[in-house]
Structures are given as structure tokens and as C-alpha cells.
Length: 520
Image 1 (spheres, helix red, strand yellow):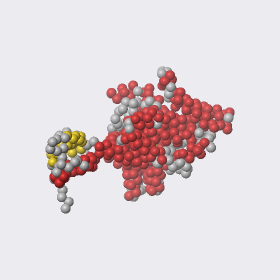
Image 2 (cartoon, rainbow, N blue to C red; image 1 turned 135 degrees about the vertical axis):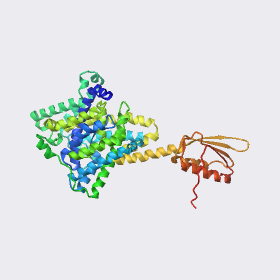
Image 3 (cartoon, rainbow, N blue to C red; image 1 turned 45 degrees about the vertical axis):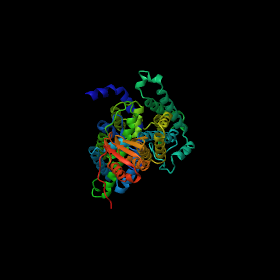
Image 4 (tube, one colour; image 1 turned 60 degrees about the vertical axis):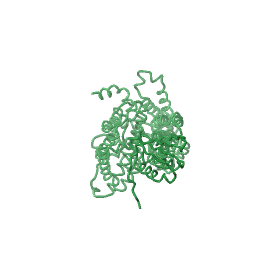
């Protein structure tokens, strides 16, 4: 009952947010299907399942699931390896069961190990990529699929050369529509308009889309040279009846059940989709104004169920998607209802609104994503990270550059490697308190170990012991330590046994003795 009242109380924010996410998700679902070499309708199926089902099972209130651009290469290669899309669907179902297993063995804890600097870098990189990738669509000059996110594009160009190319191929009508849409969205964000009781209930994206359709209709009627060409409009399959729907859907085949390649493809989907989901959920938690912590194990189970259902219905594999999720947050979404609304609207668009949806110029939707991109990568974020020091700023910048010039998962791995270096460096510095006292007979050095002394602290402690002055008295005190790693204890024991050679007197307080293994 408590959740129901929260959902009802936030309907005025969640319904408009769901509508904005729907406008962004619709062309993304279609574009990702196209890029994956899968039937056009398969991306819509996954978007509907992600909204209608996974939104309620999810461990996150604001995360939105659907087909992901990061899986397009895996889908393309998987279909080729298994010989047909129907056989690939079986791999999607198996991947879903593997994700369920990962949820039950609590593998979601992996998400907690991503450093904040890397997650923020990922968000800023996604923001920059959205801006760079949507400018060509905004200008009406790009025929790559809407939602393509990789540096090297299917048409042979890259993110930056595409910008140069698009400037020479501007479609004036699409550019005017994009510009008007962008102005509407920016005006809608002004505090004065947000205070208006009626206007704040109407999402700026809806106004922008309606205006875009109207302007293009005007162009077609009175200025045909400016009319937006069909390649730059939403292209949703028109379903007139259930028989037409069944002809669009494809269902799994069991003929590859004995093929080992099936299980390799399924395992690849499960691992990559789970990692992308955990990254997306962690990033969405950072964006959540209420700072709620998502249950990552529940999220993996939800994704597993979602992939099982999507695979059975003829859909692409899904993940929690950062573009949709960040759009949800930027649009003011508060609970999982916004994700559900987006799923319902996707379903309705297929059965009732396909004709209207196909009138929407992509340049208007590009304007929506330009605003979302800017909100993710505001200059204030870079200033805030810089103020935290180089230990936070360098992994942040490296993650941005790595994602920008490769893709999401490779970029995150590079960012993690740099982040881990700084974590190791921090651990190297702080496993103990070092205090030196001068006495008549000899120097007394007290090394007070910290609360948690792990394997990562071993190198620091060994170097400190090696550099102790000869003829000193050393007290190693573990009174405050709740845990001291075996490797560290062994190193201390070895030092205490050989210290007499340098005339160092060693006194161990509250440090457990361990048996040193003889390797000779």
C-alpha cells in the first residue's frame, strides 16, 4: 500500500517523463534492430517488455530497460554464427536464465566496485557522445541508425569525420525543425515556465514533437523543397491487424540446441548485458535526486526474466540502458511508473499510432537527446571533479576519452584500470601510523597498524620495514586492527626473525603469529 501511494502521488511527474522516454526510445529501438541485422520489430518487442514487465521487477526506480547499442555487434555476430535469427532467440532465452542465476548467487555486488570517478566519467562520456552523434541527425544529414554510439561507424566514418561530412550535407528543413525543437525544450526548462501549473504538466518534448510534425506538414504543403525526406523520419512498421502482427514476429527455433556455439553466444550475451546493466544502474543511482540505492541482485533477476520473455516473443537481448535512464531522470521521473508508461506507449504506438509516429522528424528527437547530453556533461561536473584532486580527476578524464574513442565497455575497462592504480596508490600510503621517538639508548619507532590491513598494503609495509634505521627499537602494534591479511602477517614475522642482523629490536603487540612456509 505504501508503494501504491508513492506511485499515485508522483503520477503528475512520471507520466510526462514516461512520454519523453518513449519519444527517445522509439527511434532507438528501430535503429538498434536495423544495426543488429535483426527484424525491425524485434527492438520494439524488447522495448515493450523492458517497460511493461521489467520496470516492475527492477531493483531500480528510475532505470529503463530495452535493446542496447552496446550489444549490436554481439547480435550481428550471433545471428551469423547460429545461421538464423530464430536460433539466436534461443541464445537470448538461455542468457536470461544465466542472468537469473547471477542474481541468485548475488553477483550484483560487482556493481559496487566501480569507482565513482569512473561512473561519472561514463556519464560525461555518454553526454558528449549523445551531443556529437545527434548533431548530424539534428542537421538532417546522417543516414546511420539513430542511437549508434561507437567511434567507428558502419559507414566507414568516425564520430568526428561524420560531423565534417554532415556540415556539407545539411537538409535545411530538418535543421529548421531541429532548431525550433531545441528552442522549445530550452524554454520549457526555464524556471518561469516550470512554475506554471498547467505548463509543468506538459513535457517540452511533446510540444517540440507536435510542432515538428506541424512544421514539416507546412513544408510539404507550401515549401516542398524544405520537407524532411522519409530517411529522416521515424520508420515504424504499420500493423493493421493481429495477422500482420504475427507475420512481423519471429519465434525461437530449437534446431541449434546441440551446437556448442549456441551456449558461447548465450554466455557472451549474459555477461556483457549484465555488466552494462550494472554500470547503467550504478550511474542512474548517481543521477537520482533522492540518492536511492538500487538492489543490483534484483536487477539482474529482472533482466534475466526480461530476456527470457523477450527471446520467447522474438525480441533482441536487453539491458538497463543509460541513455533511456538518464533521459528519464532529466525529464523528472520519480518512480518505476515512468518506465512502465514508456512501455505502454511503445505498445500503443505499434497498434494505434504508427501512422502518426512515422510523421516525426528525427531532428526533433535529436534535439531532445542534445539537451539530455548537455545535462550529463555540464562544465560544472568537470569543475567539481577537478576540485576533488588528481586521484579523482584523472580516472574521470581517462574514462571519458577511452569511451569516446572506443565503446562503453572498453572505455570502462580502461577507466577502471586507472582507477585501480590510484586505489592501490592510496592503500600503499595509509595502512599504518608511523611515530618516531628519540631515546638515550636508541631510536624508538612505533608502527600502529590501521583497522583493516589488506594484501594491497603488503608492499607499503615491507618497504617501510626495509628502510627502518639500524640499531633502532621497533614496536609494531596491531591493537586497532580488526583484520590483518596473512601475507602482511607473514612479512612482519619474516622481518622480526631477521631484524637482529641490523641490530633492530622488534616488539610485536597484538600481532598474531603465523607459520612461515619454508619453500626450500
